[in-house]
Amino acid sequence: MSNIFRTLSLILLLTVLHLNGMTQQSFVFTPLKDDAEKLKAWNDSTDQQYRKLLSSLSKTYRKDYQSLYEDRYKQLKELAEKNKIITDAAADNYLQQLVNAIVSSNPVLKQSGYRVRFSRDYWPNAYCLGEGTIIFNIGLFTKLQNESQVASVLCHELAHQHLNHVQRSIDELVTTINSDDFRDELKRIKRSDYLQGQQLKTLMKGLTFTSRKHGRNHETSADSLALEWLKNTPFNAGGAISSLALLDNIDEDKYNVMPDLANVFNFPQYPFRKEWLHQEKTLFATMATSAQKENTKERDSLKTHPDCTKRIQLLWAKAQQYSKDNKPLSPVSEETFKRLQQQFDYEIIEYCYQQNEVSRSMYHTLQMLSKYPQDVYLTANTARCLNAFYKAQKEHALSKIVDLPSPFMDEKYEKTLQFIQNVRLNDFAAFSYYLLIAVESKTPHSELMLQALILSKQHFNKTSEQQHWMEQYKKQYPNGKFTFQ
Ligand SMILES: [Zn+2]
Image (tube, rainbow, N blue to C red; front, side):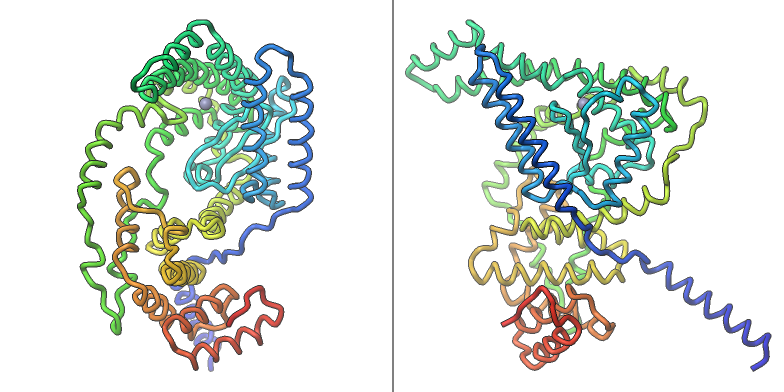
């Protein structure tokens, strides 16, 4: 072969590889590793602080304070127990880098005992618990566009903490429920003969309304302090506006597509059936839909960060002025930012599965699969979810791992759930079997894929194929984490 020819064919080969690379995702997912020592440190400092807080309580309204602090303590412990807190070194160090960039540019923050952590929750939220902890859900992180937006959210939560907003809300709540007016009203309701529950509900509604009104004032003051801090950092102050604009319609999923059920679960040997998509229009569903219309107003006002448009208006002029210096949007590491976003998309799917939220895990998987149809983990996880549905259905325990469709949820998720309700036991087995038939020759397989393969063969009564993959598993993973019957 001549040199030129060799070079030419090499170029051709590279082009082909490159084209392949464009239709596939180069990212290979392995779940984040948690750090047992960091988790222990989290628990220890939570315990220590709680004990200190209890011993500092005065006699006034002691019981009320105690029960509110206990609720928060349980919430903090649960974050560790349910494995929500991310202690993986790379992910956590990156978050601390962002926090440090804010703190070191704002001396007022230096003395305080903050701890900021990622949580594995899929819904977009960040919150301040009031005793120093700030939680950033990875479901929010994956939806933001750059580090300046992350920094803006962090500044906002740090401002809530710095201004003691949670403590002030607790104080207000305790004072209100111990006020003469509130107590008289409570007594009157207890004495009255009718609709006690209804009256109590109204009383409590008034309570949440007051706290929400104060909450809005808190939002405004946290926003303006956060912007002053953000201005001093290496981040772009425009993040304050763009993150709010994003929060305004953030309820939509990141991969905002309806899972292509009629395509994913359509096989030559097992064609898709239209009736699987049939929507149950029962009396209950109709009633629920009209109730939803009634509730829309109230639900909107319950958003953790309400009134984004108003908040943008209040910040606009200053944010414009502060962002004139054109600082970079991601000054710490755009590469890490993007890589973690990708990692977290998968982490959400894996975590939902581990927490037995299997229908949600499959829903997010199918959404991502429509963007990355060749992704091996996503295919293996789809089969894993189907295998879990099969097992649960057989044990009449499907509702333990599958949400019930309700018109209150995202319509795309509701339709996916309706599909799960419509198919039968053997359909789950067939889906899993035929889905994996298409990829089983692409060896070597991950442990997860092998497990999915073995179970799919078992459920579809393909004993000799099951044997083959079990032997393969033993060879490849002699100390594997799965056992099979
Ligand atoms: Zn807030």
